[in-house]
Amino acid sequence: MTRTILFLLIAPVFAAAQGAPQKIGAINIQAAMTGTQEGKKAADDLAKKLTPRKNAIDAKAAQIRALQDKLQRGGVAMSEAAKADLTRQIDEQTKSYNRDMEDAQAEMNDDQREIIAGMTPKMTSVIDKYATAHGFSVVFDVSNPNTPLLYVSNMIDITRDIIELYDQSYPVSEAPKPGAAPKPPTPPATKK
Image (cartoon, rainbow, N blue to C red; front, side, top):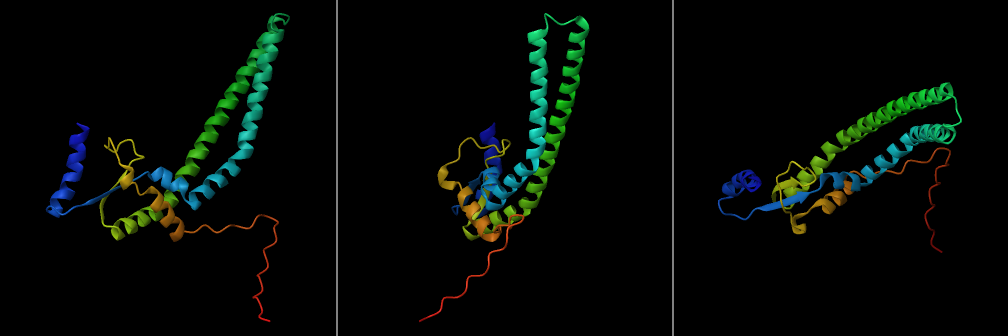
């Protein structure tokens, strides 16, 4: 079934060429986006942005574990009221922790979608430029599980080439770090 679908997808390309050889390429678009300098910088920036939230969530998890340990260690000696109070605290903090986790995941997903939305038109342009320059008729995204490909040779994988071309086309400038003084220009060398 999958081979039939793949043949139906590719057959028109071959038929249009009337026997002329066609070039087919494959790209792992996810690896291409995360492999670019822009993608790496975006991932680093996102990680920095989410670090305070992650630390707060980790602290909440530690508090829950401490309460659970307290309940396990002292449960036999505690009154039923104290056990019930401790159990209620654990439940409330667990609910709060779960909400915080869901909110953080949603924020991260939104930020990732925004990054991808910003990079997609540029990546599409780079792929189109590369495919046209190198005579490709079809380029498949092998990172998509819905692409009906069973096997892709490394010989047709253009992911690395696309990363290099993307970085050349859209260089990432290093932003100065907060509080860092800009580097003074280097004076030209003088001849003696």
